[in-house]
Length: 83
Image (tube, rainbow, N blue to C red; front, top):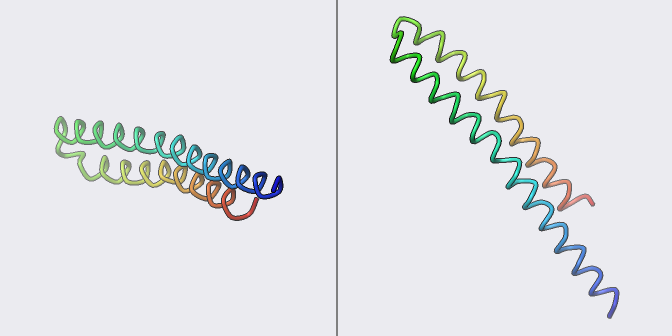
């Protein structure tokens, strides 16, 4: 009986930890990418001749920022299935 309760608590803690990991880990990339795209669009509106350069830099920045979300997803999977 006690072992079943301990197992249920451990499973609940894993789910909570993975959920927090993804919740917190997804906020940063979302805010960062939104800010980057907004500022790039402002720059393109002000200097249309630089649109290609701004777009390229924005896409590279968003790709690098997205790795944070991917890392948090990896950690969430590790919490759920490995620990």
